[in-house]
Length: 311
Image (tube, rainbow, N blue to C red; front, top):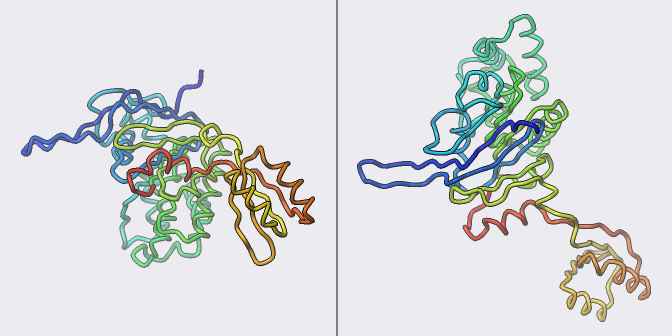
């Protein structure tokens, strides 16, 4: 059986305010596993326990009970740390350095051989689209450029595991696509990626596994295709819908959206053939038929939407 790259087993963490005698449970009996080569999304409302979980995973502080393993080692073990690339949500670099000097500094900290240092750094700067700005001081970078540099820093020592907290924060649509493509290439190279993000549509495009946490408890965990399930609705684009057919679609629980020269109809999957035939019989053209499955946003809102916060 494959050893998980990350495993939490009944992990609990309680913050104690000693002077006030108050205890706040940040994590309660949390259990989940992420396997080598997977890209896993870690989702939940603000205050759900995501930052606490990532901090314990990185060995910054420890659980009150339960067990955590990272690449087969306890959190904080130097053998695990040497194989982890980490991008925190809020980070700061030395503003008086340029990108190359900063990456040289972090490269030295990683302990890697300096034989290929220049090539590795040049390749990473090109990959995150900062090659033409490598001599510009970081203090003059935009928020998105700093974020790109953070991604490069996390990849610098060719880690087995990437822990990314809001990796697309501050990036424009082009930058977000670049990060998605980069994550896809990491998966293809056999890397494991554990990422937290508020952008559910971005996550759905790149992740294999999803963990949703709420009020310190894991409320959903599994492979993306298993959690979202097979398509249960179908979208039909047609030239028009006769009034009598529109009434029937409403009875089926369907929805009709009118456009300038066509209509989009969404109905339960089992009504697909019947609706298409009725449209043809009424003289309408059917332009396309597309199966629709639940989105990650649908799953998230069903799971924790009552808390009134966005992921």
